[in-house]
Length: 229
Image (cartoon, rainbow, N blue to C red; front, side):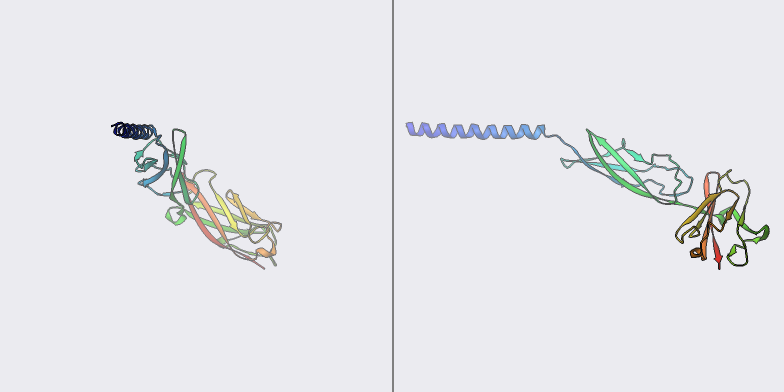
């Protein structure tokens, strides 16, 4: 009989121990802190293609947050860089970074938009007139000879219609600097190439990129540019 009581006692103790373990584990599960593990873009904004000078529009952007317990939810209190309504001035692919902070944990994701330039033929005509030693050449004639023609060489820029944004003319001559991979950059309605600016290793074809702004949008035209021996 005593042996049976002892067995029952051991079983009772074991049962109580198992019950305590279950209760402790249950409390630990209830007290487990759910943390942010990541965010992702569900839907990109309705507008992802822009022209230079337009502002970023994030309407339609949807972001989802993920958590350590396997749950997820759509969030709206994120931030972006650049921010909504920022002016997009750099042509090409622009990365928009999305950041979200919750309980001291920061997670990020991103998406891209395309920023285009408007060809000058879409609304603005650009003409180039060459002046060598004070003698003007026909519009559109850009040809510099290093022999028989002295420097400086001046190019006069005419933009039609003339109501482009004030001070917005910008020009770049690719590969025509002191070295073949240098680009000369300037602004204004004319530019002058001096002998000190152009070296013999700049001989050959180059590209003159001319851009102006009208109503905040950038118009651009690329024109062949030749430096001869």
